[in-house]
Image 1: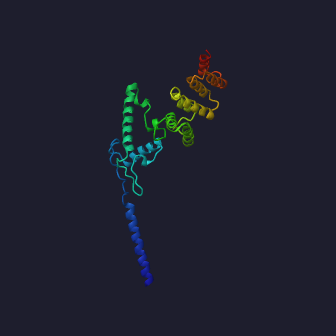
Image 2: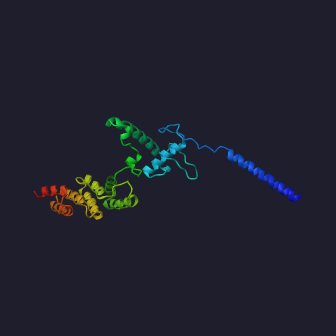
Image 3: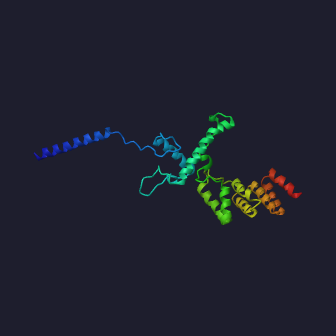
Length: 248
């Protein structure tokens, strides 16, 4: 009798589990919460549409959600909050990009489908602050000295080499030195010598070095640099022209 009762009891339990399981199977899945506080993106956009745009931001700037959004430890992200200035900056830049993409085809007289659209990646190239490497290194050199700038170059290269963030070719350091040539000539020469350490067969770097040395009225050193440039690239027009000017 007890055995029959036990089987009956388990049978009832199994039946209840089947009923509950069926109820859960038929219950509609919980809908994700709709985005709140949309000020630039369309207010009727779904969560998936907004997330797709946010993912483009993270790829273009190389950042996470916490760059623009308030995220307190142990709590869900507060995506609706406007407490971070980066969020307002992102909104402003979205408006600028939208306006440019609308106006550029008109200004060029081209079909919108034929013009290149501007996006976050156009300027940011995978970094939060879209500055060229020359601007970054020149600022560090001015504030902390050239050795700090040289170390920063190596740090940035270790982190970003192979990405589209910065120009780590010889032209990147030439571009760093060129604006400094007349006002901070010694630093320009240091950057170009750094370039020759990294790219010893760069004729353009030797030409840029000669120009900086000439700015210091060191004609002898400038001619020596041009000779090295021409030894590497005998057809270098800039080196040939400058050599002729200096030898006059």
